[in-house]
Length: 215
Image (cartoon, rainbow, N blue to C red):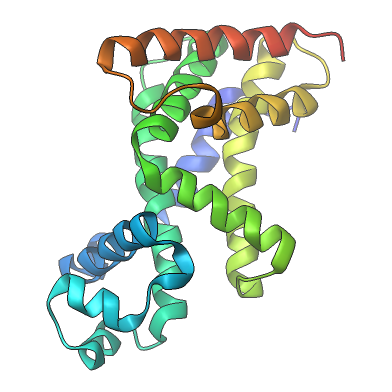
């Protein structure tokens, strides 16, 4: 990993996103996935049934199976993929203008922190992944895919840290990502846009401080 530049890590991430044909999934499938995420955020993951999803999108429960033959398990899997795809598109857009490893790092932190603060589904996604680590709730194939996504994202941070000259980059990055994923624990998500900007600046400074720590 230490031999990969931030540009190479970005390109590997982008290549993986290109492998998914989300436009080919159709608006109806995406609408169902968004409804599932909204229900899970509002009522808890385990409370979302095929019936509640069907009611949310105003169709009969059996009709869901025409879109997702695998039922609820398929919807859960596809909602994880859909969420990460949207995150990935936003991330690539955020780092698109970066001209240095420092700019690349700061852009990633800003995007990561802002989405954690403003999009509740980001915390839901983290919760599902954490629950799977403890209880093994995801199918093995999906778990392997999630691990791959997480590694690709982490590799972008690690490559930037290495390009910036920091040793033991992977250990430092894991601390930074843990801090960012817990953003709503140390920063209020009820903040207005001006407060969010100040908090985002603080998140960048905090991430740089972690890089400077003596590991």
